[in-house]
Image (cartoon, rainbow, N blue to C red; front, side, top):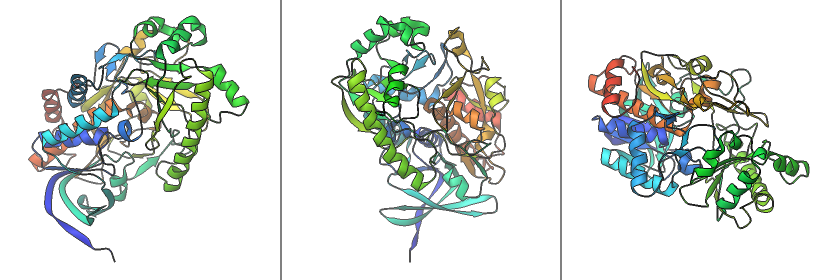
Amino acid sequence: MIQVKDSKKAYDVIVAGGGMSGVFAAIAAAKNGAKTLIIDQNGYFGGTLTANGVGPMMTFFAGEKQVIQGLGEEMVKRLVARGYSPGHVLDSTNYISYVTPFSAEGLKIVLDEMIEEAGCEVLFHTYLIDVEREEKTINSVIISNKDGVSRLKAKVFIDASGDGDLAVQAGVPFQLGRESDQAMQPMTMNMKVYDVDAAKLRAAVLEKPEKFPRLNRDLDVMKNTEILSFIGFEEEFKQAKANGTISIPREDILFFETSTPGEFIMNTSRIINESGVSAEGLTRGEMLGRKQCEELFHFLKTTIPGFEEAKVAYTGPSIGVRGTRQIKGTYTLTNEDVLEAKVFETTIAHSGYPIDIHNPKGEGTVSVHSSQNEEIKDTAFDRSAFESYYSIPYEIMITDELDNLIVTGRCVSASFEAQAAIRTTPTMTALGQAAGTAAAQAVKENKAVGAIERAALQDQLIEQGSYIKK
């Protein structure tokens, strides 16, 4: 019989999940005076950037305008000051304007420091296993860790689990995957390799730029940027699939140099028809992802210039999930909201990242910038497409069912297409800061999270460095 121990501590805010949205929610809540606890199943913060090998951060910018600032930018400045990042650099794939490479190990340290300085309490290696709710209030959460099973109470709870775990256990309705068929974007097992001759790789592009239509849109970026972002080798990849050495259902290879010269993150594996909210699906995905990475590494070594002496640092550590559940909030952000850059009176964040959908069923990736309202093509490239950005309202993070729950991260209330735009890590830092600030405001005013004054929330975010166009 499992005994549930009541914790002697009570909190203003408990954050479930230490990814990029959760960690900044906790920091913001604590900075605004709330006694805050953050729990995470890992032993470090950073979510996809540290646990799934994702990188670089894409993107804090819309063209030359930085539309994501606040705590996320403070993190970047700390990384730069410590030599863990070069800062914001031009994207040589010409997909967006700027990307932000970083050291994953450095990021762990910086986030630890920011959490400690804010005065947050932390429980790593801790799992959320149940939620206790009475009418429209969550009274407590049940957690499991090496101390056993415990009950924790708070005034406001923030679900930053990525999959809406806390919200769903509390009875909040949700949409799983694509509205038409519940299909989810593919999962990816990233692979980090090192000892790549980046100069040789760059020379291969500059020698035959017509082979690389994405890179050839603005070849000056490829010539001049110190840190490479890369997509291409479609013909070689197609041939490898034809002869059976590659089984990855993708059309090209995509990889990004980190802050360490010659070290690249391979974002190329594609696990389709599996669910990120199924233990069996995640298990199959992990195993298939490693198999795909082994195939990919042999392909790189034997086919791609500059990879002849490359070595594998690691895969993962865990498989990356792009999207699963979207909670049904008091407002749902739509495809049209993103493409038409709809203006909201309750905006708490902006983003310039486009709709980016990896085909849930196989090959193909669809990308649409908000100013274009059409799929990005390899012809008639116009860098002004990067300048558009859209708004994200507070109401996608709160629900009609509960008065003391805020949801942040990739599982907020958004359509399949809109979520494909807002899911990347810089946007998560902005959503997290807004969620934590709102939670602290609700505690301070003794109000339901849906009843707080939106203008006051916006003013507080702006005062603390966020960019919000009012």
